[in-house]
Image (cartoon, rainbow, N blue to C red; front, top):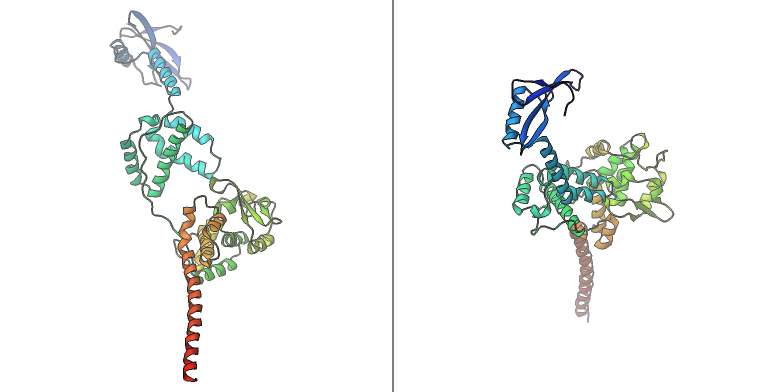
Length: 386
């Protein structure tokens, strides 16, 4: 209780002491006294400026607490402590996510997951245990998200919610949910390809460009099918010239991969200028590159490519399409070259390989037909000249 001089007000059980505000100005601090359960309670009602407290409002606070309509300061503190203690024993979605994210590699995928959780999942399920989630809760979230985000994005968000719950279940931290979280159906498999003329125009536009970093980056994407982020992270130490491989670190959050260093890529990298930076395609001040958009878009525009063609990721599709169209490489090998974890990602190129195989089959059929026609012609000649 305050030891300074207590100054009574006209309201029973309400007094104040003179103190100072945070800024150092004089400020009244109001206190109330009342009996509860036979015991005298004396506690602070609030500060004059900070809490906008007055004698009249202090009297109202006192009345509510006497009537039991409002907890005393001590009771509120005890309630808060009890709630915090209870929450520590509850594996809520928020608590599960904090544990889940600790084990994720510190990369772009981890950052994206944090953003999705904070923006879309946390506002709805922060203090909810998995067993408390109802199908209707998820349905409402899905419907709300589909009004402002694409089906693919909503699917990613709901997948994250599923992973968080599965993480807790696998570690015996919580029970699961007795229903399947329904995700939106997504039809967005896009295979970007270029016609022979478009590819010719692109190669011409690349050669005309003065930015050696951008032009060689685009060439390397065509020669190897590397992802944009993989080229941004690529260091000279990752180019294994002696062994004939390129070391891809952390491809899309997965284990490191080795992709072959073909002759075209080798020649390109051997002639590519080195700087003091450890990166093959360094960004500003020699640090890791974060963008190439301006440079590649300029080349795309000069080549007259379609507006929806993605200058770097599209070249990865062109690389894969050329290999599949050759008919000389099976889809399993193509999957390894593209470092796809899921074979379904590679399956989009199956029709190109099928078409190449059909053409190869037609070649065999034509050879047999020509041979058969020659035999028939020979028979006719023999009949005409016995």
